[in-house]
Amino acid sequence: MPFTNPAVDDLQVWEWESSRPAIYGKYAASGSPAPACDSYVVPKWLKAVGNPQEPVDVDSISKTVEATFQALEKSGPTGIDLQGLVPDGVQGEHLVAVLRVTFRWRQQVPGWQQALAVAEAALTKQGLDARDALTGLI
Image 1: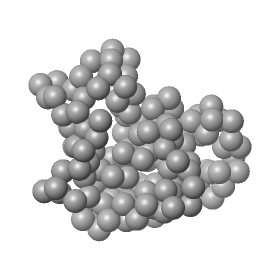
Image 2: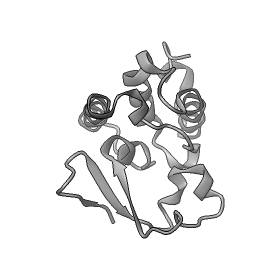
Image 3: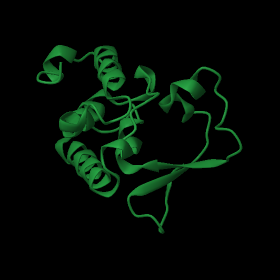
Image 4: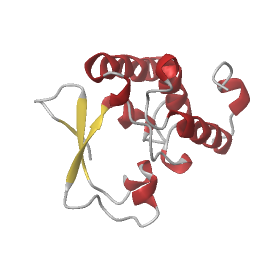
């Protein structure tokens, strides 16, 4: 279960659970926890992207967009790390929102191109028209 880290207002701390490794491909295959840790810090934008059941209403997507802009402001484009995402471990519409926000810096955002392919696969898996959702990005 996630809990807010009061010391860092734009981050979430997650206890490593068997359901959470799907966010990152390198851990999803084995289901093993991250080396030598029982918890890990997840930015708010990634919390939404990494939850396939995340609501997709306007307010929820807007919060993801806002969190992405805050992360860009705080850490720059390299602070948005999209590497290692897997289609089964993401909410496609939230990932598209992050891709749209970071489009201008796509060459600097680690894993941006790979995340575009992950978004397409996730949207298709969710029964959505990926080409329509990704218009302007592909």
